[in-house]
Image (cartoon, rainbow, N blue to C red):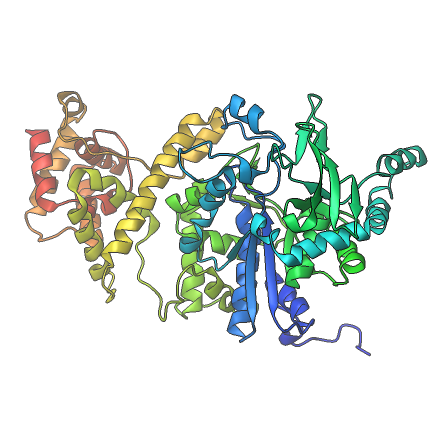
Amino acid sequence: MEKPNQEKKPQDYPIHWIETISNQIEKRNADQIILATGKTPSGYIHLGIMRELLICDGLYRIFNNKGKKVRFVLFIDDLDAAKRFPSYIPKEFSKKYLGYPFLFIPNPILEDDRCYARYFGDHLISTFSEMGISADVIWTHNLYETEEMKEMIRIGLRKNDLVKEIIAKFLTSSMTEDQKESYLNQQKKWMGAMVICEKCKCTQEKLRDGTIIPNRVLSFDEEKDECSYHCPKCGFENNIKISSGQLKLNWRLDWPAKWKIYNTSCEPAGKDHCTPGGSYDTGLELCQKIYDYQGPVKVAYEWVRLGDKDMGTSKGVVFTPDKFIELADPEILRMLIYQTNITKHLSIRIEELEQYYNEYDRYERIYFGHTPANSEDELKEIKLLYPLMQAKKLPKKRPARLPFKLLTVLAQLKPIFGNEMIINKAKEYFKNEGIEQKLVIKSFNKKIEKITNWLNYMKDLIENEKNPQEKKKLKNKVIFFSIPKNITNEVKANINDSQKEALKKFLEYMGKISELTEENIKEIMINLRNDLKMKPMQIFQAFYLVILGEKKGPRLSPLLIMLDKNWIEKRISDSIH
């Protein structure tokens, strides 16, 4: 028996939540580990899906590295019916296709051969390559055509009374006696499967008051292997063979049926499904008692938010994975997912991108031994997480990187001086910092494109912010500037005589040096201040007026270093003469 306060060895504890989950899965000793998640393609799928996808992807990598047989599957539930449509779908289109499975609804965005489900599903799947996600995609309609799923339907209908009993046990536990009696009366004719109407292709009807009437199976003849139904949408009624592949399980049975077929080891789910006695627990008991399988390891996670706002596919803020990777590297998102405990909200703040990049850089420095960790535990965690953060192959040595602030300057200089100039400036930075690695032009150009997108996103964010205090906070996160082709007479008139003298002397100092560096710029500025008895702010303002046509801008030294020496000389001369 363990003594009180006995010190435990570090290896006695998993160092991270993802290891806790992997240990639970590994204890089952399955021949193959199956990691699963699913999504209904009811519209553009928001960034929150990445939490469960990356939980699975991280586990996939951990088991793969251990030499385990492992598979990661994503179910796109294209047989789910449209109960509502997002606000960006035209109203007439929405009215027309309510109740249809997304598989049978045409593409509302583009005129192509893809259905609604395929368009929005592909929109998510197209990000997997850049995100580094290794999921096998299974479209639900294909699954329902298999003999395995048809057998799950037969079993579910054969044990329909037990299914109802299990569901009722969970749903009525907090009901009053009157509520319970009313519910049980409503469920007397309930069957655990629906039919895709042979005439209209609908699986449900939505009434004006919002009530959903499923095209539920009315009876099951096991001997004939067929079901009867009456479509609430068009009124068509018929008997249909289970072998037809035109039936779909109620979602409460659909989930455990998939778990049984695939012997699912783990499926993460949002906190709304995972409350005690909730839909996940119901699914586990159905899986065990209807399909004779223990079910997966239950993993609950908190939601992802965009700043302080909830995201949603059908409502709320829609910020998609492809939008994120337009603005930032996928490694940043992977870092945020893995470093945050899954029981905590994850609020992604796009305005904090610089902070995120700095944090990633710190992880990288510690991983490659360039910077010491704060503790042995932190080092162990980073050794675990850094490989999981990689969207591509794990680098053998620390990649050379340009600072985020420098990239924001170069991105804003590109429209003025062209791509070749900013490439040369990036190479100069590597040289001055003693970095031996060569600049990878393709990666650099991609990074500049993302930073440019982020700058434009920030401009819109600031412009649309109504709260003055919040607007000010956002403005402090980024420095925008532009360099006009010529300085106007109005700007020249704002440069006073003392400032003109400072600029003139700066030209004299520049004539004595071959290139501008942080050190010689600092020395020149000190000399100007001492020679002319001027306040530094007055001197800096003169340079900003000459270069930007504004009284302030980004840090002056890095800006001057990024500019061509001859261009600076000509610009100053034109401004003071």
